[in-house]
Amino acid sequence: MVVASVSQENVVALVSRTGRELQRYKKGRRQVVGCIPYRYKIGDQNSLEAPEELEVLVITSQKGKGMLFPKGGWELDESKKEAALRETMEEAGVRGTVGGKLGKWSFKSKTHDTFYDGYMFPLLVQEQLELWPEQNFRQRKWMSVSEAWEVCLHWWMKEALERLITRLTGQKLGRVKQVVGSIHCIEDAKSDLLTA
Image (cartoon, rainbow, N blue to C red; front, side, top):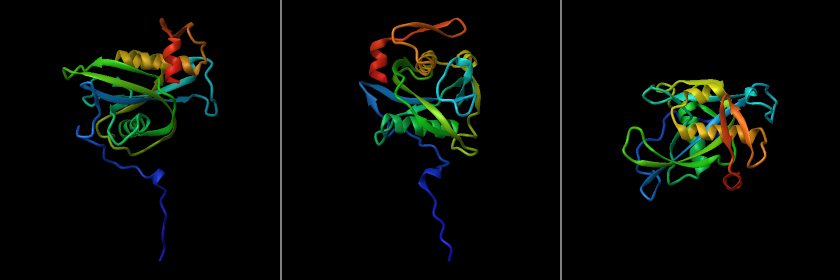
């Protein structure tokens, strides 16, 4: 008899979590988390000199009417980071190393008449899966930072992208730096210290 052992970290459930029974709400606002999956164009690179050295992964919305970063509901049995990793694997089919929180944003849903709190994290991609839970509902595409900024549907995700670039370029707190094209990001020293 031959017995094979399978590491749990290599097993991917091909079904996304659904329903809102386990969703977290705070003061009536649904709590959502997500990641900005990124990779360096030069494989072994671990710091960023310019945004052109980086690619980010965007996905289509469920209805296919635009591009965004993976995000979804933070559930009661998960930490924020665990939820962000789960949502990114389910929606974009990638896994990797999650970094410190980029920030928290409050926004109104475009489809529901309700407010949400959204938390975003950077995810340095280490594995891109061939099969993932939402591959039949979404497309994924690697693109430059400036392309992603142009196509991203949500202002708060664009702001998270700016914060990611600021963090990866090692910009000093409180200084202004051109991030992409004519977009400028003023990093708030207090919020950066709280989210790092």
